[in-house]
Image (cartoon, rainbow, N blue to C red):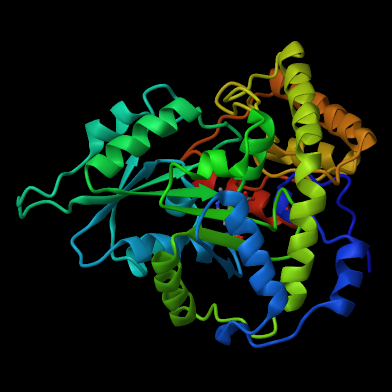
Length: 378
Ligand SMILES: Cc1ncc(COP(=O)(O)O)c(C=O)c1O
Ligand SMILES: C[C@H](O)[C@H](N)C(=O)O
């Protein structure tokens, strides 16, 4: 059964493996990866670690696993704390893993510039280990690149990295879409990763592998992270088939990312030309509609998406290499129709701002119902 992704704008997590990836499985290696005996896995880990300029890599079944075991491996005995952006996936969308696996306090920081954390933001929210027994000291800073599709400025990464390392603080990067940052910035993956002690690189999103993420760092760190990976059920056995497909995704699809950024930027420009306000500038594959200004009714947005046969989720429009120009034109029609309705019937959202909350066609329509019920309840 084929699953159409040409009209999929909910997330780049919906990208599907190509026929070539699936056929490559016929020749994949086999071996128990828990004992590091699968050649394709070892090749993938070494290839990506080399790209990142790190000593070692670890194939993980998901970005959540990769992030959470990385942050745990940087920490020792509580009380301890992780500082991150208030929108960070490790804090907002990983089911509270920082509290359970790491027993960590979190300082979620709103960037003063509204775009990305600067060193000044970090210093202003940093809790030193100065013996004050009221506090949980900050041990790790976790950044995300890209975050909301925004590319982290390298000069800021450099400042943050130097300060963290001068102050004994570890620096992790949730690089689920670091590939997009590298492609957009015309820099190597290694040029970005060199500022971090660890980086989680997703393979199953913008690159289109079916499953997995690659955690990179120095060898001792990766060994420790592997320990936490096994502890949490991530010790996959015959994973060569997954590694083989992921390696194809890295090699074949990384070069395609800049084209998806072009589509997203053109779509963002079209939005602004039609009066549809955006939350942040469009720099890579995401367009965030500003729902505080664009008062789309979730049901109307959902209906117009169904009418034009496109799938969206909340206020984020996600582009990926499997989209088509026709589908993007249909997306414009769906959005324009819903936007025109909102000018006459503005929808006032209540409650916490919803990051990626579904209000779209297809399997997400139940989420629309939940959103409507929640709005009534407030
Ligand atoms: C920025 C970011 N980090 C981490 C993840 C977690 O990846 P996964 O869904 O594979 O657990 C995601 C999810 O797509 C993400 O968007
Ligand atoms: C939020 C969700 O977990 C996924 N990371 C996405 O970007 O769609």
